[in-house]
Structure formats: structure tokens, C-alpha cells
Image 1 (cartoon, helix red, strand yellow):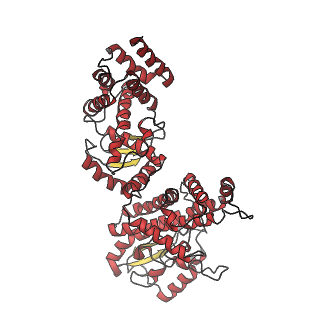
Image 2 (image 1 turned 180 degrees about the horizontal axis):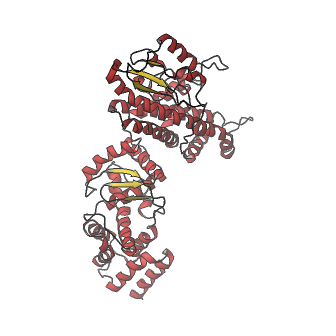
Image 3 (image 1 turned 135 degrees about the horizontal axis):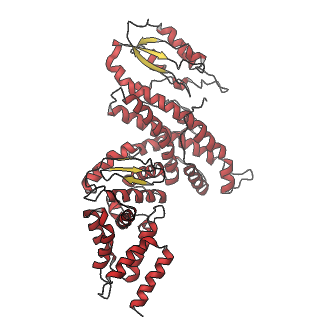
Length: 509
């Protein structure tokens, strides 16, 4: 298998979690693909391959119109391929569970023994599949335009034209035939892993037509490699991504290779059923789906536009407060998988819930009527304190859109991944220790955060404490309130707690 220089990034923790699932269960069945850990590995495989497909599609879209039906079919093919790849990987790993003495290996021993399985499927194979997917998607995306022109033009097979071109592919270089010729049913590149060949339209009067039968013979030779078992390892590449609406070969070993063909059949059925459920697989899917929720909920004062990739490396997320939300790649991917699970009725993982917390923080920014404005450092800190306090305490509103309660309520109290965690915990601690009605404070902070300018959030945080009464009906002094808000921003948690305890003791000696 020739490897591509394109190297997809893969989250190893997804594989380790799936391995832990297999070890705990003592095996792997096709139905287990629906379980959280195997499904997350499937989603990680799909994320990598889907990235490749979208790259190929984007390159083609510069010059070609691509029907939505074509895009849907190609994306579903990638999901099914990813599912079958995941099935074989986990099934292969499960066969190494038992030691020679018949006992189940310790998890550490099992994980060491399946290291080569990980490297094969998620490094070597995946790199080759990634490069193949980019090129296959480009051809598939262009094919509809070719078909619209029919035989008005010829198609021509072209290699990369350098010294790395395979000799049997070089014999196909310059093959020129009408689109309707049967040659194109089977010999549209890529014809192997790492193949860089392509197909282009050419004018009929510019190049002489090739002999179809001779071209097909050359195509057969280029896609013939007999393995030790007597089978032709390259025959599976005899397909047309654009006509067949497939990124990967339908006869790939993932769809056939097994000592138990019935299990493979059941696995494919499981994966295909998963594909039929409402699905959020890519950021494009997420944007399309979330735009409906955003419009219905009124969460975006200036309308929702898109979720994008955060380019500032030290940011978890950011927003222009004009409907665009930027998320760090791993957080974005976790939001995609979390929302897919929520609409499918599946449980989400803790790291996905934490990503939702980041996402909801940025959504909350977009509810401000004034929009983005220039702030000094001090103003920004108070603004972020207010925004995170509101976001943290309204997470249930987000989950309510999916008909569920917040599955990880700890993120309403403590979200260590945000830089504003200490400030928010201090502010909430003050409310609790002093005995203020938290609901009253939240309502006040939220109203002022959404309706007031961000430059005024320090005063708004103070006013929210001023307006909330203690259980005995009394109120804090204004000077105490000013100090509480300032020190909630400036002090470490343990120091701040001692400060609040001092206020309480002075009031109740």
C-alpha cells in the first residue's frame, strides 16, 4: 500500500476507550457499534476521512456545480466505509483478548498487544485512505458536469507526469475516449492507494481517440496484482466514483474480509441503520441544523451565521458577536458529535459536554443587543465574568432544546477549561455564602448582560448583588458589594473565601 504524504490527525484516546470497552465486555459484536466508546471511535475515523472528502469537494466546487444528491450519497458512503473499517479494527483487536493460558489479559497487556492494530488501521491504512478520498472526491464531484456535456467532449486520462508515476499507470496516460465509452466505467482514477492520476475534459478535435479495447486491456493490467491467496488485490479499484456515487470501492475488504461473513453483514446493516438516523457528521451539517434552532430560539441578536475553526491557538473559542462562532478543532469536533448524539437520543460523553459549555458561552455572547465593542482589559474581565456566569447557569436552556436535562450538571458549577473559572466560582460563592437569592442575581445579571453595553458589566454585576436580598430580608452595603465584585476577579479562590467569611463574621459577630 503506497502511503500519502497527507497525514490526518487522529485522536488516540478514542481507540483506547473502545479497547477498554472491548476488554470490559469480553468481546465485540456488530450491535456494539452503537455503544458510546465504539461509536466515538467510528466518529473519529469518519471525521478524518470526511475531512479528506470535503477537501476534494471544495477543490472541485471552485469550477463545478455539484448536486446535493451527489454530495449526500458521497458523504453517506464515507460514513458506511468508516463504520466497516471500525468494525474490522475492533473485531481484530477483540481476538487478542485471551492469553495462551485461556485467561483474559490485563487491560495494560491487552492495550500493548493491540498497538500494531492501532498503527495499521489509524496510521498506515488511514493515511492511504485519506489521500485516496481526496482524489476520489474530486473526480466524483466533477463527474456530474462531465455527464451534462455527454459526448460533446472527450475525457482524457492523465498521470502526474513525474518519475514517481507507476509504469502500468503511465501506459494509460493520454488515453482519450468519449464519456460513454465503457472504459470509464472501470478505470477512472485513483486506481490504487497513492494514485495521483486524474481525468480531464478535452476538445474532440484536439486529441485523437484511443482504441477502446486496447485501453481496457491496459486498464486491466494496471489494476491487477495477484496476492498469495490467488485473488486480485487491485480489482476493487475498477469503479467510477462519479457514476457509482462512492468514494471508496464497494468491493473493499472491509465489506468482505472475515472468518464470519454473517457478522460482517450484520455490522454493515448496523452501520447503515446508524446512517439513516438524523446525523451531524461535519461542520456543514452542524451549521445547517443549528441555524434552525438558532432562529427558533432567538439566541442570536443579529442572526446565526456559522460555526468555524478557531485560528487563535490560545483560544478555546471566540465570536464576532455577529453570528459567527469560532471553536478550537477538537472542541468543534466534540460539539459535532455531541449534537449528533443529542438528536439521536444517545448519551454524550463528559468531554463533549465540556465542549458544549464552551459553545454555549459563545452563543451567550451573541445575545447582547449592542454587539462587539472595544474594551480595556479590566472591562473585558468583568464582561467575561458576567457572560460565563449566565452561560453556566443557563446550560439547561440549551439541553432543553433537545428534550433532555443537562447530563453533566457539574459544568454549571466548575468548568476548569475556561480562563474565567476562578472569577465565576468566586462570584457564585459570594452569593451562596452571604445567603442571596441566586435566581434573583442571575435574572438581574442576564438582563443587564443582554440589554446593556459590555463596558458597564462591572456595575451591572454590582447592581445584581445590590438588588438581591438575603434570607433575612437585609441587603449588603454598597461598599461591600463593590469589594466583592472586584475581589471575585482578583483573588484566588481560597483567599476570596476567607475574605467572604470575614464579611459574614463582621455582620454576625
